[in-house]
Length: 125
Image (cartoon, rainbow, N blue to C red; front, side, top):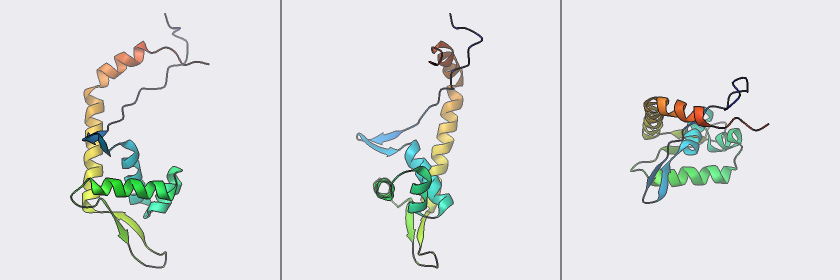
């Protein structure tokens, strides 16, 4: 029986992913990248903030854009800072839908998640 005085295990978390034909369309990493692009105003700044290379971020954006009828991220030309990137209306919609679905899924499974959490072994250490 677990020691009730032991430190609680870190909470379980759910990560929602959407695939089509075996290919990842949306997942938490891509959605985090879109949110960072929205707040930072560029793919390179978003990549730096997430600790990923610009190339990796650009490839993820390109791949994600290709899954949708219209791009989720678009380039912004010129300006004093040399341009950047921003979410399109569709990009903001997809991000909002993903966040809403994640919140609903977490709420719908809260009881089972708590029961599963209670069955976990205590953290090592």
